[in-house]
Length: 154
Image 1 (cartoon, rainbow, N blue to C red):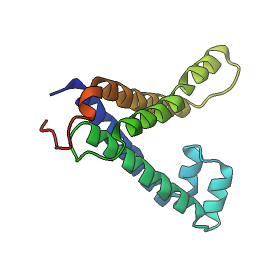
Image 2 (cartoon, one colour):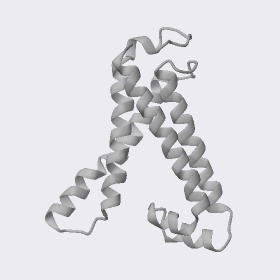
Image 3 (cartoon, rainbow, N blue to C red):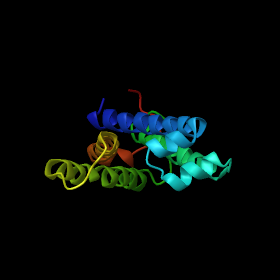
């Protein structure tokens, strides 16, 4: 079993967890939108009974779930999805770019230049870990990602 498969499985599973978290946010409502940083406008829109926050969040649920399937596809757990290599690189890049905010946040905490909620650091670290899982797994499996359309037994 390739080590890259484990990284891509981890990335895929964590993407599904992020998708599930977004489903929970929809059901919890305005307080969850506030806590997870969606902004006061999203929270007040949700409080007013608008469907917009839920619809937008469902879009994110679908996106993260698709990303999860791409991670599992790269690991050989599910069938090969289209544009697999480029999708895995882009998914890893998006998560990693979101995650590198942790360095600025830690700098701000260290220098007391701005207040940073500890949860923001956690959100950034989680994004960084997921992004690196996708990128490490993709690079490790680069040759085999285009080799076959069969499901790899792991």
